[in-house]
Amino acid sequence: MTRRSPFPKVFWIANSVEILERFAYYGIYLGFGIYMEHLGFSKGQLGIVQSVFLAFSYIIPVLSGTFADRFGFKKMLIVSYLAYLPSVLLLMLTKSFSGIALTMLSIGLAAGIFKPLISGTVRAVTDQTNKTLGFGIFYAMVNIGASFGPVIMGRLRAVSWNNAFLAGAASIGLMLLITIFFYKEPPREMEGLTLKKKFRDLAIALSDLKFAVFLVLLGLFFWLPFWAFFNLAAVYVNENVDTARLYTIIRAMFGRPVADFLSRADDDGTRRLLGEAISHSGYIIMILQVFVSRIAERFKAIPTFSAGLLVMAAGYLFLGFAVVFHPALVFLGILLFAIGEMASSPRIQEYITWLAPKEKAGLYMGTNFLSIGIGGALSGVIFTTLYGCFLDRQHPETIWYMLAACLILGTVIINLYTRKAGHFEEVEK
Image 1 (cartoon, helix red, strand yellow):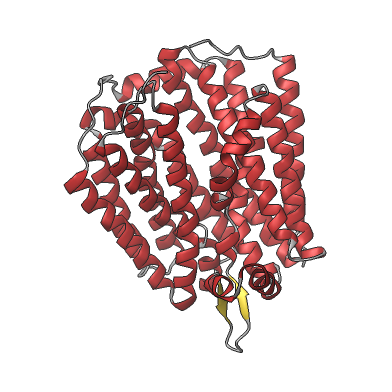
Image 2 (cartoon, rainbow, N blue to C red):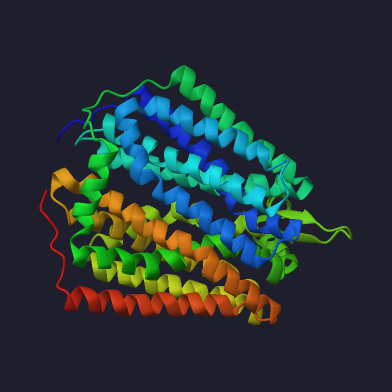
């Protein structure tokens, strides 16, 4: 058995930074719809901000890797922090729609610059003996930050929104200090790509019409309803689900200290569960990812991906039922969404890398960011706006039925497309 190489110090430094960044990113983003409601903005205005934010978060990484190659990971990390930190602090000052939109655009830009840098560091410092474990640790760090961010910042915003934004800024500030004093540029081969060549390579990859259409279908029928969950779940739970009953359920199951930590008190003393405290998949992924991955790897990519979409659709139905039948169904809905996410998201991204020759795997993953960006850019302006319309008609749960229908339709269309257009051939590396 080959002996596993030890991880260098920079591996652990990079992963600690990843925890802090995901803490700030998801801590701010998942509660942002509640914040916009607090300021009195419409769901249509919220949808615009969400779309701009997600578009920049996932399209910028297509280009930022090129700058990291030219200038180094450490310098680009510092650049991302210098965009992140003042933008988060500016949320404490700006209250106009245009000001908030521009601020979130800047945060999305910073997140987009940051996104490929830590995974790139992990890739640079791992080898054949430890890469699987290395990326497993990295994925766990992502979910630790994404789980604790909404919970901690939800508790803080229950006192004051400025407290939550200060926590996010403090997290970014700590990242900056760790990077300056402890992060060492990992040794690696420089590709020397220019932006001009990057665009040329992307154009070549997308000139394969069959592959380009496949990416668009993924953007519309997977990433679009996928991002709608993160745009809407916290707002929906906070506004439409009986969170006082959810509090009593959590208290009965886990005790009063846990329930109090995940809740806030109304003026009359009634405690209500914080919407953003439970409306994410990070804590479920930390527990179940290995189990789900072990099952998923036994089957081919597209059937596994399709099964994940159908499980997500079931989760969306139960989120709708939580208003109609019983609020506890929200827990089942989130659990099913998380299982569907674990089965579909990693599998389809792995599948895309295997469609390319080894030397072009990174390029094909860059095109995948474009697919994710398409879904993110449309998710707010379409589904958050529709949610506002259904809310005005006293049927907010309808949005989840529409999202479930979108996923089911997507399953049918993607399977028909791969059959009629011809199966993509995975390349043996």
